Image (cartoon, rainbow, N blue to C red; front, side, top):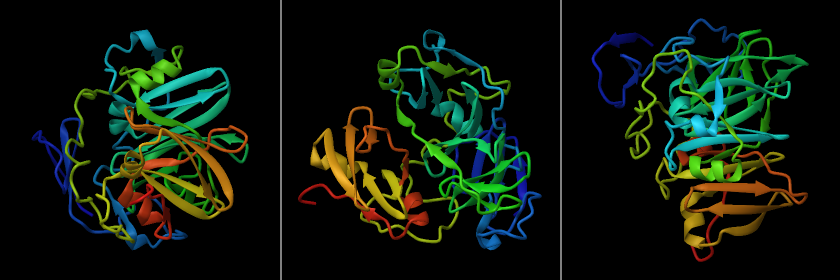
Length: 322
């Protein structure tokens, strides 16, 4: 895939990504590796695309500055954040910042975390970033599979699929990452539940306009930048937001449009013989899932097309009467 740069500022469009003052445009060719070794890839190399920016062209944040909620005057009540709560600590990461960086390498009480976000799939996933007993930092490879970001670890340069939660090439191929529960919600909702939360500062060490969305209009478009292996059925908009859960190899999607239709804020459902409780917040467009012990369950909130691309055998939750 050839990478071409233009200093002309313009909104995002199919075939171009605006990052900083540079527009990265690309042709739809596959097999580019951005310098990564794909010789033992568990995925067909021809289905791995270069997204435009080179390796680390989208810079991960590895020394995050966190501030008190009262200092976060750049956030409005309806701004989207992903939040994580571990022990007595809560932290929020604004989507407006994640759009430009995609990975925040962080630590809570000595526990290394990777907070990841793929703007093309709308997926935010938190991982335990200790691998084989070693705290690990991740970077953005610039490569995509099914439009989803491929991370790489800086220790071995193995590539990792965010949605698969698994290394797909390199020394660690086949190794799984542990997902951690997080909330994908509004700033007002997270702050109400966690008034002592810390927040990722706009002072990231990089020059970015965090008040501008480099992917403006993408969520409403029916198009994706790259082909996917499994095209989602069109009874939902490709960018319909769903919560996806995987329980011992059985997958189920909960489209937000179905949760709206049923009109219930609380309900229960069974996946692979396991009963779960759901709390649906229609105002803040957020859903929380707990198991039979009351523990929050890690899921993946993102676009319908992306969940189906990875899980074409997914079950789909339907509102009663749908």
